[in-house]
Amino acid sequence: AAVDAIAADLSAMGLGEKKMQFRLRDWGISRQRYWGCPIPIIHCAACGGVPVPDRDLPVVLPENVTITGAGSPLARMPEFYECLCPQCGQPAKRETDTMDTFVESSWYFLRYCCPDNEHAMVDERVAYWCEGGIDQYIGGIEHAILHLLYSRFWTKLMRDLGLFGEHRLDEPFANLLTQGMVVAPTFYRDDGHGKKQWINPAEVDAVRDERGRASGATLRADGLPVVVGGIEKMSKSKNNGVDPQALIEQFGADTARLFIMFASPPDQSLEWSDAGVEGAFRFLKRLWRLVYEHLAAARVTPAPTAELSTELRALRRQLHQTIAKVADDYGRRKQFNTAIAAVMELLNAYGRIAGDSAAANSVRQETLEAVTLMLSPIVPHVCEALYAALRPGHTASEEAFPKPDPTALAQDEVELVLQINGRLRGSLRVAAGADRASVEAAALACDAARRHLAGAVPKKVVVVPGRLVNIVV
Image (tube, rainbow, N blue to C red; front, top):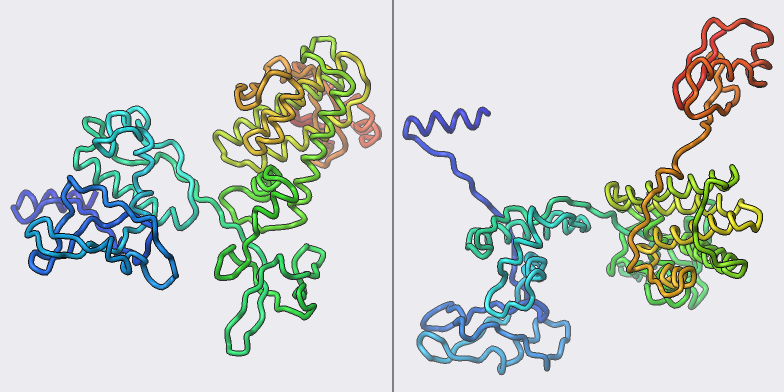
């Protein structure tokens, strides 16, 4: 408000006006490397830097290159850089630097809207796909401060150039989720010259403490000790990355996906754990076993009725509570680890169901179908196979996400905490619609209350509907 007031006064006095400026600090878009978009400039001794004419665009990278690691291979290819100046026609040299790859990634999401347009960067389809900005942007911390900044700048530049037509796209993204980093232990040896030789965790045998942390390690190749470093972000410089191919060959891609999603919330760091990977693998094997044990008994159509037992009604209620929670965790909260945990709890309850009645098998079928659909975004390969087994002729990827059934969520009874003078003394079950007087009477008549009251007359009874009863003596 103060800035606006000062600007208004200065403008009225003719001493200045309010102006908005955008500034980027040190975006060095030029790179001495092969990969990246060629910079369309030709250097002429007489004319200076001359843009490549539109008719000669795009400048295409040659494919017969030899990458040695010593500078850009383009600078060693006369067939690429030798050319004529488009202004004076004299021999000139094409620019051999390429643009930072952030340049392409700063607008490629807009190009996805109209990839078949051969005459313009974008067209009116951007208005359909990007109305109000892309719903969700997900990136690591480097993306949040670099790519996100550059893409916002680039979008505003395209807007100002009129490339969006009448569609005014000011901000490219509506929401940001900054994902955490994957961290892992590091191991090294001193090379004798003050430098560390970093050793990949797959090459060492580690001794672990009760928390699973490495407390000592030896190099598998020679059996001699190596130094245990700290827990660091996975990187090439620390050589502590995990080869996903080896993980996939041993456990499958879905195990890796499940572990990563379950190990921590997406916005926090994830510490890599071989034991955690094995735990994810055991869970998927258990899910597979439960499905095929059920199919071996009976494949049925899920059609629960009002004739379910109390135990089956409780499982079905938990199933539809889980569906509601998982949908919320995926869609609103973006907390995938809690969604997986809820499904695990549901399968624990599923395992406690006994009997082989038609009603029990029907609820089992409904539960397993819903579980495979709920987990399919995270473990698509396993769930696709299991869903096809549960419902022959159907595919999980083409099914709608399950929705909670209000009738299943309805409860005939609720469990209330029983307190005496504020201290927990037990619990009691009452009808879901019981009035206050009925709840008070049930609380005073239950065994736990009579035992702890020992004949004392209560001063009052406090009822918190749906939660607790506190008897004050």
